[in-house]
Image (cartoon, rainbow, N blue to C red; front, side, top):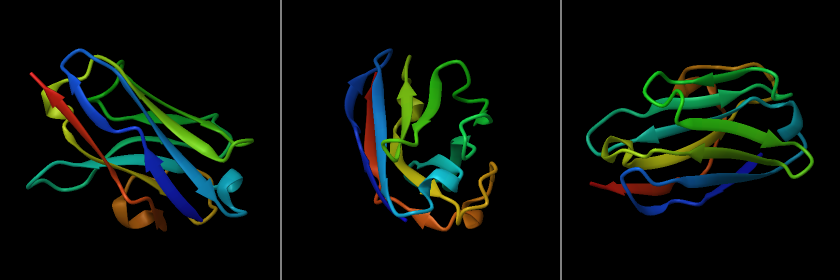
Length: 124
């Protein structure tokens, strides 16, 4: 699976962005997908994850109610809708895919494929 993330940019606090992650490869529709982020000087952290069917979702407490993960298996794409952005959301956002297990995983090391990252900068 190859992943290409896009949609990052500069936005003012309170604004919105939608990240997209386009995947190629046969296992996308059977893979759980996730968005991680990494701020300067901090560890990479899980933001949101979605099971292979989209039936199960996970959102970190820090983004719950503001961010929504979704996927379109027909388009081989996973999305992260980010609303009410805060300066502390500033980070490089990475999409990730597991190796075809399909259920939500929570650790960085549990995902097999990674996109290149897209920078989100939220100004105050």
